[in-house]
Structure formats: structure tokens, C-alpha cells
Length: 360
Image 1 (tube, helix red, strand yellow):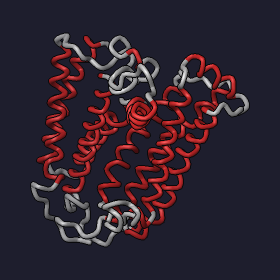
Image 2 (cartoon, rainbow, N blue to C red):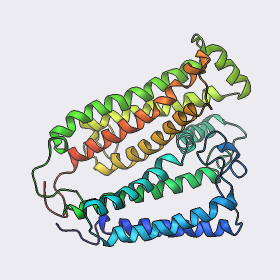
Image 3 (cartoon, rainbow, N blue to C red):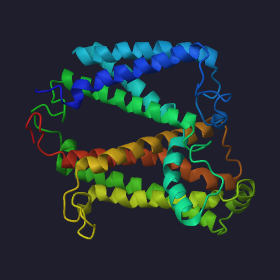
């Protein structure tokens, strides 16, 4: 099956190798007591009870990072050049997949999601309402050093995921671009099959953020909600404006839910005619796939963090009010996974004829 150097599958493993090599060099730098170490509560106070690496120390962790980075670079080069199948191939793909999941979903926490979600709230509020006052866009809780580092990890994780997919396709003698082997497609990968299960995924990916949006607007408007009322008042006293910020975040989440519907609607394939300059033109698949994939990743990692905090007892739910306040966030993992599935279904429906292998 044809795979050219221009194809992403021809260079993605080398990109993973380069990323890992650079990160290994960061580990060496931190081992020499260099600044900017992003983990542990001493260097990342906001990571307490949030980051899975909150207890690590720079002097102990930095050499491990260096070793893992250099080992990852070697593994990525092997993925780029080898073609082993069977147990060896499965082990290689498994290690690449473990790197992808760890970097993109496990190590990051909820802060990339809140930073991205609050950005339009921040920009609109600052431009039109001179709000929020005294908030540094690059300060703690927004795009500060630890959060920017998490975006770096997410990028590395997605690169490793691509390397694993590309290797698996090469072993299967599949097209590096589309993954087709020339055999009859399975039912779930056909456009008709993807349309069926994709609709179910969209229902979940729309319902969860709408539930979250409704609860945050109820809180912002101080509408009594049983046990949660006292918790809302307590949070408002400790962090003035928190619920209006949450309402703004929820509003953009609701907008995202509406856009998610486009993954199974005609207007997700052709721009509506009322949109200036674009009306009536086809929607390029990547226009939907790239942002939807990114949102699916940051939502999933945020949900995993909240569920991990629940298991570790950082978020006790003895008080029914606390359950009402935090329950929507514990569904974010489901939201992210459903959005990822809906995006995959959209890709399978719209991929058409492959420009590399010519299969349809």
C-alpha cells in the first residue's frame, strides 16, 4: 500500500522522536537544578489535590524524565523504521499507546480546559464590560507556566498517538493516510455504519455539557436548588464572581454542544447560506475534526482528574449539596469520550476517496 514521505504517517514517528528527545533534554536541564520545573506543589501550588504529580520533587523526578525522554526517542525511531508484527509489534504499539495516554490524558488536569473555556469569557468581558478586573490572562489558573507545560504534554501525547496508528497501519499493509487495506470495510467503519453509532455518540456529547450549563446558570442566578444552596453561597463568599465566571464557561460549553450537533447534520457538511462569504460552500472535514478532537482530549483529561480526586477522597460527597455542585464535572470523561467517538464517526462518513491510495 502506497505511503509517501509527504504523508503524515511517514514523518509522525520522527516527530514523536524529536519531541521526546527535547523533553529528555529538559530532564537533563532540570537535573542540573534548572528553573521552570512544572510539577510538585512547591513549583505548582495550584496543582495541590489536582495534579497526579503533585508530590514529585525536582531532584528525584528530573533524572527519570531525562531517561524516559531519551528512551522514548529511541522507541519512536524504532516505530518509524520497523515493521514487526505479532507480539513484538503489539508491544511496540502498546508502549506508544501508553505514552500517548499518559501524556495527553493522565498527567494533565482540568486547567487546560478551564483556560481554553475562559478565554472567550475573558476576551468578551474585558472588551465590552471591563470585566473581570485584576485578572492576569497569563497569571495563575490561566496560561501560566504549569498550564502551558500541560499543553506541551498534550501535543506530545497526540504525536505519540499518531505514531502508534501509523505503525499499526504499516504492519497491516494498510494505507498510511486512510488506513484502508483494500478489503471490504467492516460495517462500523462504513459511512452508513458510522452514521448510526455516531448519532448515539452525539446525543451523549450534547447532553452532558447542557446539563453542566443548566446547573451553572441556576447557580449564577441564585435559584434555590435544594441542598446545594448553602454551598453556592459559601463559594460566592469565598470567590466573588465565581458563579458568573462558571456561567460564562457553561454558555460557551452550550455553544459547543450546539456545534457538536453539526457532526450529524447537513450544516456540518455545507455552511448554511446565511453565513457571510462561506454560505453554501462545503465544510472541510478538518475544520470540524481538529477542534473537536482537541476539545475531546481536554474534556476527557479534566473528567479523569475529577474522578481521580473523588476516588482519592479529595472531593468528599458526604454533603448532598457537594454532590449537586460537583456531579456534572464527574460526567466530563463520558462527555469527552462521546465527543471523540462522534468526531471519529464524522471522519469515517466524510473521508471519501483517499488521495494517497485512491480507495473509496
